[in-house]
Amino acid sequence: MLRPLVVLGLAGLGLAACTTTSPLPPTQVIRYHLASPSTPIARGTIAVEPLPGGAPASLEFASYAAAVQDQLLRNGYTLAAPGTRSDFVATVDFHRSTADAPPRRSPVSIGLGGGGYSGGYRGGGVGLGGGLSFPIGGNKAHSVIVTELKVIISRRAVPGAAAGAGQLWDGSARGFADLKASDADADAQARRIAAALFMGFPGESGRTVEVK
Image (cartoon, rainbow, N blue to C red; front, side, top):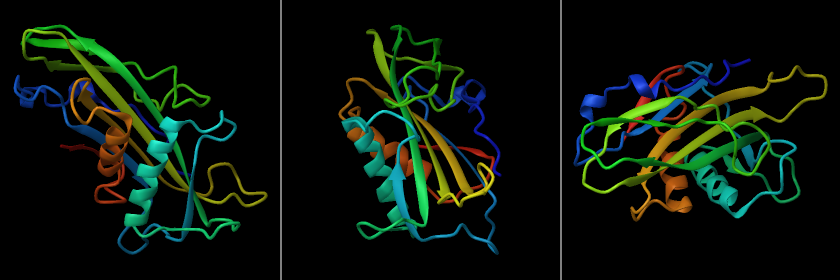
């Protein structure tokens, strides 16, 4: 069974690298798995699904599901034929929220809690709570969009198997965008954060990396 998701330590990341011309930090990504060069993660047919027992899929979920599916196909998975059962399932959870940043150039702290809404599904977000500090440039207040994405790849459940026994890969990412930016819409953010999450798939297990 893989390790559970842990909080990404954003508050302790190198804030000195943030400048008034590029105030938002890069996307933060962490992955957990047991793969190695001699035992790579298994590939096969896969289906993208929301959290079990959740509400019907929303249009926003469709954006994240499509972005994750595209990355899975790029990394060797294939879609099951209609009416057949896939070998694997990728469970997707996401959270989008906004945070207001005051108009100042010195570093300020913005609380970015992870609880509450979770992509329209049951649960408390993807578990990426905590604070973030970064400098905000300009003379006007900024509204920042915070996008969090979690994906778990598992084998289809086998009757009698222990919970979590089929889990192969667990990845989480958190990205930021200015609310007024051209790429702040859900579709663009979904593609960007999914690409960051799957960069170098499966990635180094247990290590937090920055993707610009």
